[in-house]
Length: 246
Length: 334
Ligand SMILES: Nc1ncnc2c1ncn2[C@@H]1O[C@H](COP(=O)(O)OP(=O)(O)OP(=O)(O)O)[C@@H](O)[C@H]1O
Ligand SMILES: [Mg+2]
Image (cartoon, rainbow over all chains, first blue to last red; front, side):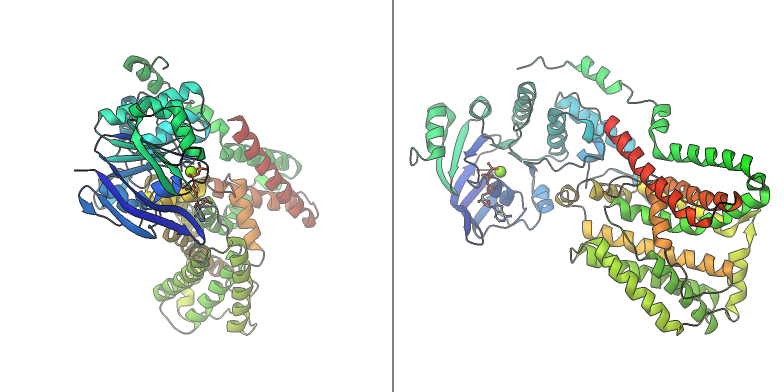
């Protein structure tokens, strides 16, 4: 049984058809690359899966059930986590506070409940260790490197036992060394049985970690094939439209 | 692939102590404002020895409280990236309503509850317009400032309220009384500051206030009830303004309809001087308190040093600019 199945999903913004009649399946523990030109509809597609906004039409089946997420927390409850293109972190808070934002660990004393700072720091440290990232739970995100910020955003997806993690350009705007770190993080997610949809403009990243590659062009899914049967040249041709479909 | 750090390596990274406690204190805005207060105190003490007398200290400690109470309430509002310039008017309205409720014979506890409720209601309306209607807080509260001040004139018909009836005795006793040698209003400041700081640093609400100020969109995406939290900050400020009115009117013994006029500027100045960032995300209730102390010390010192009181605004203004520069300096260096 597929983990996620999209059936004829479309999304319009006024006159703009951002995503048009897209159907595909994602298997458990699979890493799938999602590529496409700027404005092709990649972010729109994963945001629909993550419950940021509803599809204009089409069906979505997750874990064997037809689902409709009205808000991101619904999708999260079902086991879908997303790392946004802009990371969506609070610069003024610590790494630990960001990891647990909206899902704080509380300590009760009598009828009162308050933040368990220590437990959150310890748990965050465990997550960073699991991800093998040199990120300190107490450090303020504002002063962190791009790779550390990615680690914080990715650690967020490890809080609950997510089955699917959506990553929107996690390797944009970070150094080569940090790209390697992030790709290693993605592989570690797979080792834990988590399926990943990875949006990226970088061929080496996608061919480095993805088993399957999907290409969106102007909202249409024009390719969905195994990485081993394709090549960067073919994908590039599909992205820019030199090749119609594959 | 880079060499991935092994476990012991990571442990050493995690255990690196981030900045010492002392360094943290030295880096805090609050610390430098305390230093400024002490320096001003020492200098003015030399020029005008009367400044350092017990009577004058008591005077300062009584006077700064009213601004401080409201500044404590203003802190979470500013931390979410909001602002409320209607608090001076709300102080006026809750002040005269307090008088009118007392005069119409309600028991004192009922009067207190009503006044807090009116304050909270004004705040909640501000907050709702800001959150749900997505209107800019400055404009919303500017409108409310005018509206509430005008209603203050309407309900009093431009009369001063000073006959408080039976509940008046309790009101005046509360306003001018003290407990263990400390004025009641100062107790209120101490308790409010401690409770507020606890709320800000130990509860989900406080964490959300900070998060909203840091990145509202991220907060929303994390499932935080952003709109409700924002409304709550404005409502809490309104209630604290009502509480301030109770102490202020109880102390002065009368409620004029000009009560609180211009006070909003002092409150915001105190909050900002104390380290709250108008862009949101930072602030402490201790900062709000020490900022209020600074403003009162400047006022009092100029008075005793025989400086023309018209200079007061210049000094407060310079300190606001100084505070903003200090904040900029700290955040770029950090
Ligand atoms: N909230 C929105 N309102 C209106 N139009 C939108 C909205 N979000 C996206 N669009 C439009 O939908 C189209 C697809 O945008 P999307 O962000 O999904 O592209 P993308 O493939 O993620 O591009 P990039 O690689 O630049 O991130 C674009 O034309 C964009 O302008
Ligand atoms: Mg995008």
